[in-house]
Every structure is written in C-alpha cells, then in structure tokens.
Image 1 (cartoon, one colour):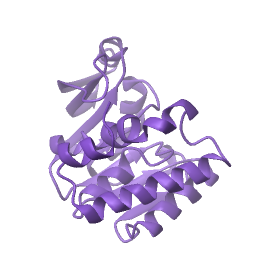
Image 2: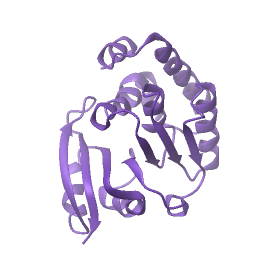
Image 3: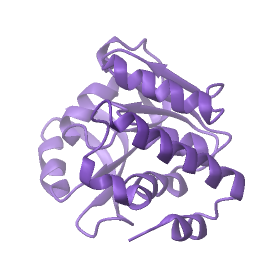
Image 4: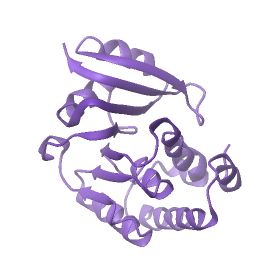
Amino acid sequence: MIDRAAFAEHFNVPRETLEKLDQYALLLLEWQTRMNLVGPSTLPHVWHRHFADSAQLLPLSGSGKHWLDIGAGAGFPGLIIATLDPAARVTLVESIAKKCRFLETVARELELDDRVTVENRRIEALPRQTFDIITARALASLEKLMHWGRPYSGQNTLWLLPKGMRWSEELIEAKQKFRFEIETRPSLTDPEARLLLARAVTPL
C-alpha cells in the first residue's frame, strides 16, 4: 500500500507539491461529506487508490501535454497530472454541476486554474479540438471511451487509460468497432489491472 511518504519517494515529489496534494486530500474529505465523489471505503487509502493510481500515468506520457480527462469526477487522474506536471494543461469534462464546483475549487486552491479548464457538459457537447492525451478513469468500457473520445483524437494522440480486471475483455470488445495500436503496462496499484496505451484509433 502506497502511503504519503512512499508516494513522495516513488514519484520524486518536491515538498511544495506534496503540500498541495495534502490540501487536495483535505478538500476531498470535506466535500465527500456533501456528495459522493469517491467510494467511501477508498478514503483512508487516498494516496494509493487515487493519487498513485493517477500519478503512474505521467511517466508514460511525458511532460507538457494537453490532456482531456473524460468524466473527471473527483479529478482523478486529471488534477493529479496538473499538480505534478507544471507544464501540463488539462481539460476536465464532467456533466454533474456539483462535481464541477469541487473541481474548480481544487484547481483554484492549488493554484492550477491557469492550466486547468473545467467543462460542465457531456463529452459529446465539447467543442471539437485535438488533444495530446485522452484519459478516463472508472467511467466506461474501452469501446465506449473510444466512441466518445474519437472526435478529439488526432493521429499522434495517446490514449492513456487505466483499466481494471476486465481489461482483456474490453480490448476484445473494442477491436470489434475500432482499429488501433495498443500496448499494456502493469498497474502500480492493482496487480489485476493494466494501463492501456492506444494510438491511431480509427473506426472500422
């Protein structure tokens, strides 16, 4: 289990950034009393279940990218990426207004709001643009994510998607609708999960 100290060491996080993540954790606890942002059982393990699970994507993407986080929820992985990479720009798409208020509060309190855009809308309503990285966590099947994200994907876009124990089934399903290049990496936080890296996603 990755705690605060192990997180700081593994991801080489400076003290100032760690303090911002402390603030994020406190805001999550406070707002969780008013709305369901994350599974209640995960709160005691926030550094492992949410922070590290999100942060493990950054070494696979490189710095300074423009991220699209679909169904951003409590801000994982998008706000963690923005906190750890001062060169990243992140667009968080979330259809539930009260969750957007939380995302905006975290971005403002952590002084990320110059690089973080919160879009309170369904992904289908987002104006067309191309992102460097498309991500989503605990939202929908791979096939559904590709359907939603394809209008925002260019030839060089990297789809960086953490997936749980059904990841291989989801790959089979997605290949019935889309053509894509795929790599899989082990997850730092769950031995049954995988990180899926897809490129050149096109409908069949």
